[in-house]
Length: 577
Image (cartoon, rainbow, N blue to C red):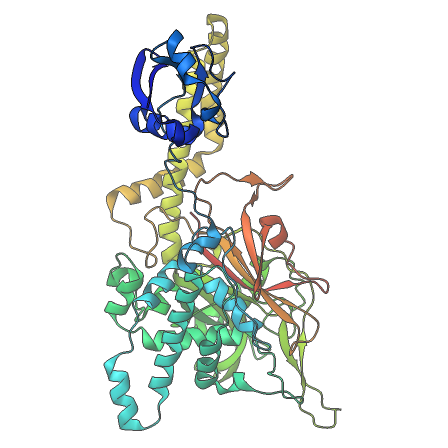
């Protein structure tokens, strides 16, 4: 071998070079000795008679007369340049979503998965996407197992209803799990079959063999009915709530009523035996003295509702001509009205005023817009009537205050919480103003004194409001406030936020198309306002069966109706975060 002296930085490496090994052999030996990768290695001559410039891999070392070179320099000297530091890959391996398993990919996609339309199943798909955003329902479903008593009852009766309900619930649970595990649209085949088993009316076929369109609200109510029967008892309720007491539940006996149920207080007062405000009363067209007439006592009862209704036709009685333009007006109308009922005092039927109020608030509630109604057709051939749709626009906001819809007992609690929150807000403002005032100059301090002198005069004008505020605050300090519903925060003021909407498009009540609109999660809490309003313009998703697209709150608020575009049919509200 040819003796070499390789100068590498401050080091000198001595070795024997095998000419027959070529340049690659030389570099391989140097890489082993120094750790410098051969592809990053540059070799240049220091002794005369060698190659010129940087040694190339295809250079023929045998073309050099090493005998003559060694006579001038022994050993032969060359210079090597190159770093021994090895290149390292990125600390975190780059993984593409396409390479992830389906269940992992679903966690990273921008849009949630949709549901395939299996033939006029948009009524079902839209409701399921909205209920998918109810955590307490999802928790209860994920832990659901058919009760053993259901199977015993089924075997004893031979009917199979309980088994059908169990299949319906397990297929719903599995469908939601499949949606969470994939980024692709999921065909709800098993759940549709289970729905047809539980509700045979949804399996109706049209004249040409196609599945008929169904009512989304009827499906929603049917789903809650089955789920309520399958989630009875405290154990089932606790599966959906982190902690809940019987006092909070206030009569709710299953998970569905704990999540969606509204305990309604109904008061009936007889119009014909109610004092008119003076000392006489009109009865059967005759004026009678109030003292001589027994007053019909009000009739109070309680009932369970799983939704509120927005009456958009103008009242619960045919004589009402109220023009409803906002959801609050429609709900108020649906909670009151006139009925004919027997009066014990008068000994005959009389007109009574019906008034309903919420006696237990839920974490989530649904409002149905009364867009569909049955119209009699006495002149038609079959006299069967026809289902019609009300197209008029009825506006709604991103939040709703239910204080005015609540019973007196619930209002007392909400009033205390609101008074406390108002006092805390005023205290924060006063501290901020005080801090600003202390930072003023001496000259501005004089203005401050003038302001303080004027303050008592202003406070005299609002003494009544202050008295109510102090009374409410005193109540909150003296006694523990009773709960107004399960799973509600301690500082709940009766404000709910819109988080999901089911819409219907089309003029035909038995046709058209349903879509679901669901508010997206907003972990950072940053949101802009809709132009010229106080409404938060948050991110939403619109579920058109298997197609999922992003949208904004301003798009959702346009779903009020009045045209051929999609209009709200079911609005879902939850406690405002």
